[in-house]
Amino acid sequence: MNILVTGGAGYIGTHTCVELLNHGHDVVIVDNFVNSEKESIKRVEEITNKKIKFYEIDILNEKALDLVFKSNKIDAVIHFAGLKAVGESVEFPLKYYNNNITGSIVLFETMKKHNVKNIVFSSSATVYGMNNISPLTEDMPLSTTNPYGTTKMFIERILTDLYNSDNEWSIAILRYFNPIGAHPSGKIGENPKGIPNNLMPFITQVAVGKREKLSVFGNDYNTHDGTGVRDYIHVVDLAKGHLKALEYTMNTNKVEIVNLGTGKGYSVLDIIKAFEEGNNLSIPYEISERRPGDIATCFANTLKAKKILHWETKNTLLDMCKDSWRWQSNNPNGY
Ligand code: NAD
Ligand code: WQD
Image (cartoon, rainbow, N blue to C red):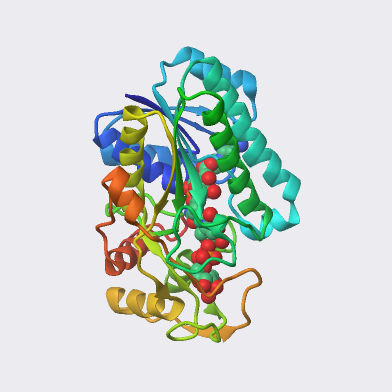
């Protein structure tokens, strides 16, 4: 199949493109490189020994997107393109609502116009908000604590309404938990601009000497060691989940929401320990204040993914720590 991947130059997009190409699909990437580098696409080509067609386009640009659909016979879309920094979204909500929501609407309109009605969408466990108790199931009530999360909740709703208006659509909405790790080649990985917001890239930047020490945000949560517990998922497992979701959309005409996680929770201190032991390194850290908006515990119920996508994760926490470090140590300054 010929798959249009929006945001395909980014962290999860590149790993998914590798899996798509390795499974014989063709890939067309649309990305404006606001949070990525063209080099990442070259690296995917190196890993797979295949060529990728890419367009440097903003998904808000209706005319340019229309031309992509006119020039390529697209079978399905995997929609990663979006801004994802939680703190920045609080500061610049309109930027987030415009880029993520309006951008998605432009994409869905263009798909509709060209009669492409299969889509896999990147949502987030952030839509479960602060009040649900883990393990989180897909039918729990949603709430959000920041504009980024609200964009995901709205886009989920828009896609559901779209399906309800026209059952020819086939839609998989994937709620990712905490993606970490990198392709085992060490050629592609997470490449945050500026100071990392997320735990694992911060740890790898401390390990490589770019940052002095890690701040652990709070050790007085109601968890086994007081630090926050999350469901960390290897990005390659996550990427493979997209292939299963794509297959699912090709064989059904439904809208389904599915968690992609491991179902296991690890604390910040568990992650530091696993990273240190797995890579024979020491990570200096200090305990600091809780980060506003953080919850104690968040992990997935994974039954639906197993049942309808026939997918589950394979990589261990050790794999995630080793692969994250291989990427960072091979590429101390990113791409
Ligand atoms: P990323 O920033 O690495 O990738 C997103 C890509 O989209 C980037 O290459 C960026 O340049 C591109 N992009 C952004 N706005 C665009 C626009 N208007 N037009 C064209 N391209 C645009 O992020 P990622 O970690 O790969 O995340 C991919 C998706 O998954 C995002 O939608 C994100 O919100 C979602 N998600 C990520 C996580 C996570 O922790 N990484 C968790 C849950 C959900
Ligand atoms: C994990 C744990 C922190 C950094 C975020 C988004 C979510 C989703 C995934 C997109 C927490 C602690 C972190 C640090 C720390 N993204 N931590 N020191 O917050 O679970 O989820 O990324 O959809 O929407 O909110 O991930 O990696 O930021 O934090 O102690 O320097 O690590 O408090 O317990 P989070 P994270």
